[in-house]
Length: 530
Image (cartoon, rainbow, N blue to C red; front, top):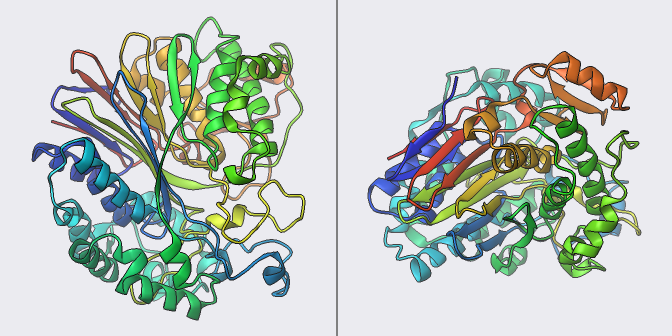
C-alpha cells in the first residue's frame, strides 16, 4: 500500500518514475520548481510517448501560498490554410481522429517550456541552463527506456487505428508486433531534436531549422499545417479562474480548457456537502454536480474569443445559486450529454522555498494523430479533432481558432495556508477526479495518499467504449453501489484499479515548510523527495 511521502527539501510527483527523478535531480542541484518541471516535462515526453510528447500542448499553474498563481497557456491554434469547406472537399463529414488530416493544430508545449523558463529567470531566480534541464530527456531518448505495461497495452489496443498512419509502425510495431513490456524503446530522432533545442534554443521549434523540417514533413504527409502556422504560435501568461469553496480558494485554467467545469463541480458540492467521504451522498452529489457543470461546459466553453459570456460569470454567486437549483439530492438526472475525450499526463513540483507548479501535457488521444515526422521523430497531436464542422457547433472549426481542451491543472490555497497542487490525466474524468481528490482531502479530512488511492468513478465515455454510464471501481461497498442504482444511476462496475480512472497525484505545501506528496497506483509513477 502506498503511503503519503513527506519531506522538507523538495518534491516532484509524476506518472512515470524517471520523470519524477529528473525533476528531483534539478531540485537537488539548487534548481527551482519551474526548472524541475521543465526537466520532468521533457523527460515524460520521452518515456510516456503514448500520453504526451513534443508534438502536443500543455498548461501550467505556478504559484506560492499567499498570492494567486500565474497560468501559462501553451496550446496551438488551427491551421490557417484550411476551413470547414477544406475538409468537406476531402469527403469529411467530421474531422478524422487519426492520420495527417487529424494533425491540424500547432503543437504548443515547447513554447510553454520557453515561457516557463523565462518566468523562472525573471521572477524566481532560476539559473540552470536549458541544456541541463533537457539532459535527462536526451539521455533516455538516446539510450532507450523500458516499455511499460500501459504503453504496451495501448500499442495493442490502438493498432487497428494507427498501423497505417505515416511513421507509426516503424516505432511501435517493429517486426509487425507491439513492443513488449520491458523492451528497450530507443528514440534517436527525438534525442537529436532535443539536442537541437538545447543548443539553438526552444524557439527553434517554431522559427528555426526544426520548424522548417517539421513543416515540410507535415505538408508531405498531408497535414494542413504550414511553417507560417508554427511561426505565428506563441504561449502566453494568463490569469487563472478561481472560486471560494468552503473557506478555500481553488484555481484552474480559463477557456479553452474545461477548468471552469472543475471549479463548478466543487462550488456546487460545497453547497450540499455530504456527512462523510465515499458514501452514497458523497458520490451521488458529486455526480449530479458534474452533470450540471458539464452542461455549462458543453454549451459555452470554447476559444474565449468566441464565447458569448465570460467564463468567470458562471462562477458568480447568482449563477451558482441558479445552477444549484438544478441539482437533486434524491434522484439522478438523465444522462448522457456529449462526452469529451483525451489522454495526458499531470505532474507537480514544489521546491524548499514553497514555489509550486501544477502542470499538464498531452497529445489528446493516445499517440495523438499517430503521425510521426520522419526527420525529427515528433509525434503530432490530434487536439483539433475536438472541432466540429457544423455551422452551429459550440467549437466550430474556424482558421486560427483555439480548440477545446480537456486538460487543466489545479491548485488551491486552503484556509489554513496550505497550498495543494493536484490533477490527473483522463479527458472527461479530469474534473471528476479533481473533485474526488479535493473533496476527500480538503473538505472531508482524508489523508492525502488515501484520497488518491481510494476507489473512483467516472461519468461518461472511456477508451474504446460508446456508453456514457457511471463507471465505478469494484472496491466500493456493493451496498453503496446498489443504493446509487436505486437513485437512478446507470452503473457499470469495473475492475478495482482502472487506468481510465486517471493517473492522479498531489503535492501539499504546509506553512512550516513540510511537503506531502501522493502518486497514483494506477500509474507507473512515484513521489520523488529530497
